[in-house]
Image 1 (cartoon, rainbow, N blue to C red):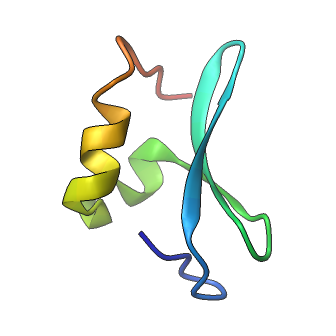
Image 2 (cartoon, rainbow, N blue to C red):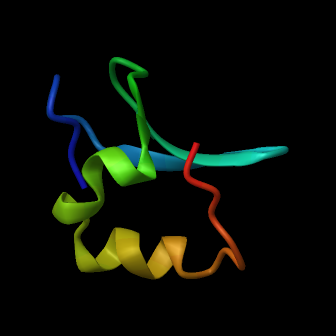
Length: 56
């Protein structure tokens, strides 16, 4: 999946209480619910590995 801001790849980052997507280029962070409708299959499969995702 690509960043809306700069077009670089989004990577999944995990912190103690949250899972976010972060751009590898500009480092903009996205909450999952902000871009849920744009998720590609690869990203959906990676996120599916987490037992729970809290929408904060």
